[in-house]
Image (cartoon, rainbow, N blue to C red; front, side, top):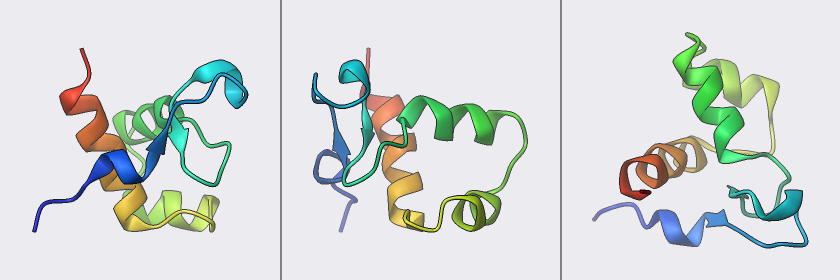
Length: 68
């Protein structure tokens, strides 16, 4: 079963000026992607941001893949 990133990523003008964030947090997708690009691991992110899950991080990657 494929991960449904749309259930985990939210873009709401009232939250972080409409930037896509992980649902239920104020953690922008952009931040997660930037940290991964700079060499941090998923495990590093889960320790630094205990409110997110591995599925949330994967959703950020799927979001980036499907965004224009």
